[in-house]
Length: 333
Ligand SMILES: [Mn+2]
Image 1 (tube, rainbow, N blue to C red):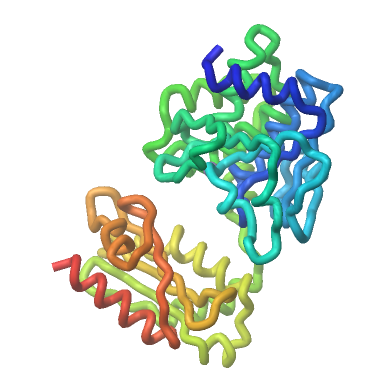
Image 2: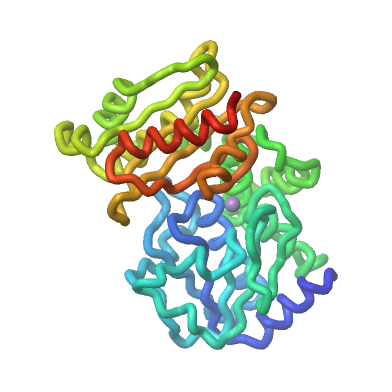
């Protein structure tokens, strides 16, 4: 057994009440990996009391999601161990204005897969830079349980959902032969139809339609770049909602902007609803074309070479757009 898995196993065995968490604004992989940890521990250690806490539940139906305890605030309870999935630091899981769990004195272990994450130096981290946290949780418990490793149909489904979500159906670079081996093992236990999964994950709420229309009216194409934004007066005039704008931005960013013929990359700007005079820009590009990671970095943001984002201080959407275009022009000659 790997050394960090041995330490993880000892921590589980020493504790009675285990709290499992994931990052804020959880995506599919975050939810799946969190639930997988609970189900795996319950399998091997039925006498342990494991609880999952989150501020929201998944928007699509996944196994055992009703076992998530929805809370408004994350604070210390009777737990003697905290396990965090899909993140390497508590700051990604807590809202400092409201949550007090940051001051916890119990051991915290992180199970992550992100290459760019900043780990907490004092705490145990399991990160083999796999495709997804779901894949990492599967691999970790496989090592811990050895010949007694026997994933249930629920765990097998969660493994497939998490991997498919974080690899974009095996299209991203993070997909390795081991990802496919683990996926195949899970599929053998319980087959999830890829078509059905992609359909469910691709759904968006109907409130995003008016925001999509507003965004499309702003579409500008310059050479092989395209961009869209919504100004604050459009939000009021068209009666757009926060959820509608966020979902519209996700949809257009991932499935529209760089699919226009002649366009290879672009960006979309949206309002930051939690802070005044603050906006967000998301860049997307196609491998081999404009590296948008550099542009986001020049705006003090971050991400990957072909998918990145930054926060912009600006009073209006127009001002935010001008700042982004300035940054673009400095890097793209
Ligand atoms: Mn993930």
